[in-house]
Length: 99
Image 1 (tube, one colour):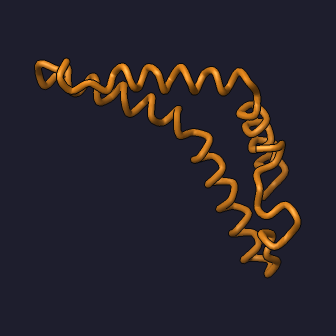
Image 2 (image 1 turned 60 degrees about the horizontal axis):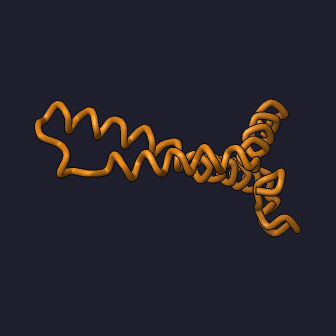
């Protein structure tokens, strides 16, 4: 992983470790739960709009998992390229900045 990629991940993980991030995700989850009502959809256009809103909300809700998976994949690729298994190190393949 080059220094720019590491900085990017560090910044993202730092942001996601803040209390404000947890509030934002809770708001997205609440909005998702309120939108997820098929009985309120009366036609195809409303269905497609609701589906788009739900997909967007779901992307934000799952962003932390997706970023962690991307980071873990990069670390794993590097360890296989170098022959060093970074997962065996003390940090046990954890994301940086306390996540």
